[in-house]
Image (cartoon, rainbow, N blue to C red; front, side, top):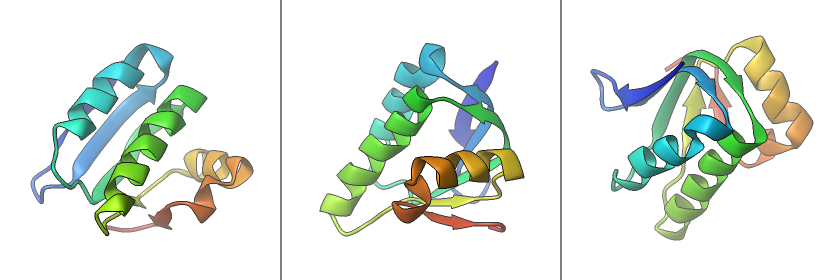
Length: 97
């Protein structure tokens, strides 16, 4: 199961498993937002390479206009995935919102 929605403070909230079966839906949601800046990952259990691709495409789009994504509250497992893939050098990752 995967859910993506806007939180109370305008942040993007991801819950569950962001994998290939959910990547198109997540990409469409992020593309519909003019300038998402915070993605709360507190309840994200898993992210596949397809999910990483969604975030990378969004990051590239935002960087062109001077913005960028800040990923907050990742679990240790999710943070490790970003570190092992080198994506921790592409995104700002914080433990708290």
